[in-house]
Image (tube, rainbow, N blue to C red; front, side, top):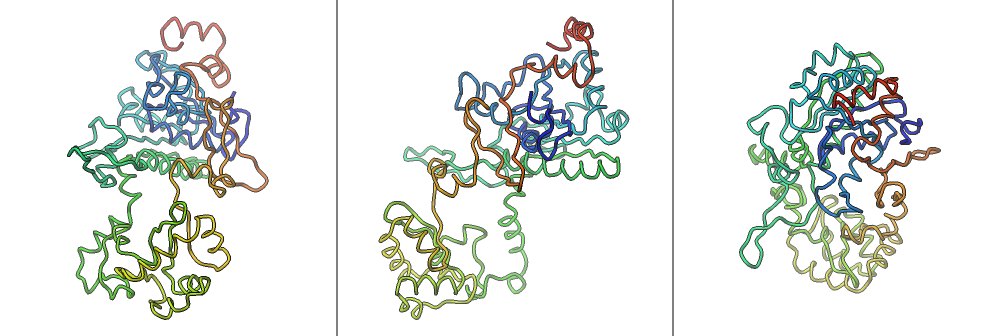
Length: 413
């Protein structure tokens, strides 16, 4: 039995019905991390996420182990009237429904907005899909990378043979979409508990990928205005820079540098941090030669200074530079990779891993720290229908005879 059922966590007592396929199931997994009871409702064939992507852990995908951890699996064949009846009873006894598949899945089975409100006026319904419930791309089949390419988050690269390739970078839409959706569900839950009024919401992973990059998108939109109205920083003589990190290419006082054993990020864009750096080095001459502006000065294009800093940063290891930053109150950070960050002392201090025994493979716990409380540890992601009998008995009070009838009808396993 999951820790959520035993009443641990901030969302203890909240019941969620999760009708999901593949990665969008992560929306409900966020609620699991806060202690909600999440019942994953699956067709008899099960969610094929168990066979998707890599790595495969003891025959099951890491994605399934991650996005469905802590959930209970109840098999319901919603093509049968008996399955529809059971789902109706579950909705009446639940707080949240997550529809994480193509838009309109529940609508087609009679669970329209009006029907859901009739069954449970306080129900919070949230659908998450690829491109959302509206727009010309609504019904296009797609996978997670598509939402990032659509949103302009992935730049094609050319390999040495002239083939276009996808770069190695973090996915955005499939991570941000479920996170944004979970945040909306929590807000709707607060209202539902306060007023008794539920909510009917939907979010697209493509929308989330674009919204996650609001800074660049809004900058491009701002640059459509007259240059007298929208300018650059004073430190750049009001010259407009490329949006976001594109505007950092020519940065010098805000730039990556090689250390003696890796790389560091130098961020002395404020005059005070720049001065502290120079004084700490015993190079007040650098500050006197290149004092810069008070704020947001990256010494853009100053190749002379960049060459000096390149040689300086090569003289210490990354750990030594971090110690220097702490001693002299200046801005230097580690440059990690997804492989090396797990051994970083800051990461080790802040993150907790589950164990192989708990979740099938080590997984990161949600990085929230609550004074005086211990976060519930999710259980391992379920096999298909693993909890069908338990859920039907515990939540709906069915006896063995009723469950046997459902099995004979093919409504459950």
